[in-house]
Length: 364
Image (cartoon, rainbow, N blue to C red; front, side, top):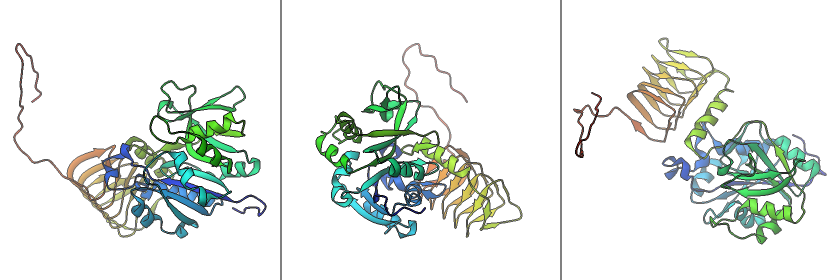
């Protein structure tokens, strides 16, 4: 992408703090932005989208998982980016992230990208639109079934934003804010004016509402494409499915003559498939061994795993994990260094405490 030298400089602010409570126990030991989708960290998809949009200077907000994020992302050169890390003492809201990044952002326009969000098709067209029109702020909206879990935008008859609410009990529309925002330096005045919400956080929705109240030019773009906040297991599995659907078949590892791969299957270099059946779309990571097993559609198995005498479908298996002799697993997210094995074969028994005149039916 070639950027006209006359176009005002833009930066990107990527939020990679947060506790990831909805993905526990995975996020007890790992940053939620680094949980892999199709064997690549969610955060990496966002960084690649930023680079494709022609933005090279990126500030990454980090919290308790700063060391892990820095180890994975490095200086940004592998993405074609220049990364600056900005520590946040604890998650105090999206507007707080803008507040603490003030010195680094300077007087440049910027895109703020939530590191655990996933947008098919990237953000290049959105950035181009903002560069061309340069409103004071531009937000991305999409229709959702239950807006109560998101920031919600109220639009007038002309489709203009007239109000924003953060996780309202009674939403005024079905339009949720997607985790990508574009701002001019005017946002810095707004984040200094607002007060913490009932959650104790500085809400970006409040800051944008402040701009609206001051008659600033706040515009919205409604996207019809695919977007997910990968904050819970269900959404992670759904994003994994979506990405895997775009796979091209590639067999770089070893598939023995007693095995078969069907459809769009990727077997990374160093992986071995032994007496097994892999039905795509699926990806098997480097160094992983699948033996006497079945791996079904929409499954990604990371590097250095071992799957034996088992079936796995519509699941994500993180690196260095083993699954042995457990029959069928589906709709699952299995963390790093996990071991899944059969339960001990002990006599079954029922322990009951029953009140008078009880009736109990036990399946035997």
